[in-house]
Image (cartoon, rainbow, N blue to C red):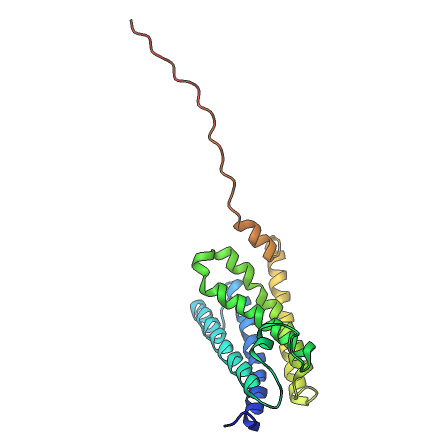
Length: 212
């Protein structure tokens, strides 16, 4: 397989569609895990395990999607373009949005690997970037994808959008009905700050016992 082989274009095209489906499933499963719900037929730990497995699988397909795009000689996409948003000469806006989504996902993956060191609250705050990277990646795919406008792709996109919007809405309503303020990165980071050390109250001087 050479750099000018059409196979690379097909791989990039197919993995882009698979990434949309996988990341949509990851977002929805993440909402289920947060709400302490489970999929029918699976225990709760099974839902958590499926969420992690699909997250890893989505990252693998994303790596193949990016790699096939870089090695395809039909367009000039460098490794710098993959990491630096809007630096490419090829469709800078749409490709740049894909780079932004990728950088946000890198932050999520990195903090997940360092979760024990940075603390659970900081990890959850950064994990909110997954909600931001999903619509950015979606717009990237709509703008640059060659299947945009094809009936099956249009319906697939609509289903994914409706599913994610519905899932996020359910999560927010659940927080409101539970009487809790909806969780945000700012509130999580604020709660992660160490509390100021309380100064010990001054002790009265000890009384000297006089001898008889």
